[in-house]
Amino acid sequence: MKKVLIAVDGSAASDGAVRVGLEVAEGEGADVVFVHAYPPVDLLPGVYGTTAAAVHTPNADDSAPLVAALAIAEAHDVAATAELLVGDPAAEIVTYADSIGADLIVIGSRGLGAIGRMLLGSVSRAVLRESRRPVLVVREVEAATPAVA
Image 1 (cartoon, rainbow, N blue to C red):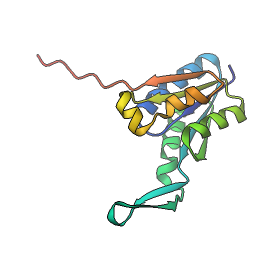
Image 2 (image 1 turned 180 degrees about the vertical axis):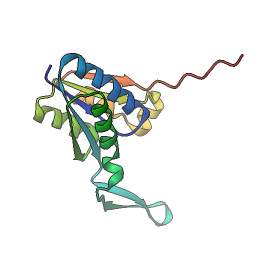
Image 3 (image 1 turned 90 degrees about the horizontal axis):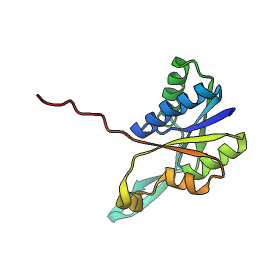
Image 4 (image 1 turned 180 degrees about the horizontal axis):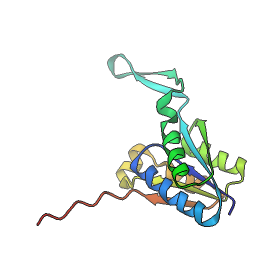
């Protein structure tokens, strides 16, 4: 394994994907590429329940997940680069993984359940469905609550 693509979005599930993806890359001596995709347009509330769309201008919030992931990789002494992508996250992740010849895609999943997936969709599920490359989905793990004595 030479290249691991890790998709990040700043969520707790994404943090887990970074941790696991870096462990895999360290064990295999692989390079890491972090990716984050943002939508090309922002939906804005309109009058009387309507919505409007405006072209999204990239900002610091878009690159923040990549900056954080690169800092973690540096702390683990793993070679990493980052790429900010524009478009549908699942499609962009799969397309970019193909373009760089990634050996593995690592992505987090919040585990929304059936209703949450139906209402919000699931990027990790779409990546699994669309990718011809191996995909490792890392589930979000809730922090353990301390036992009360």
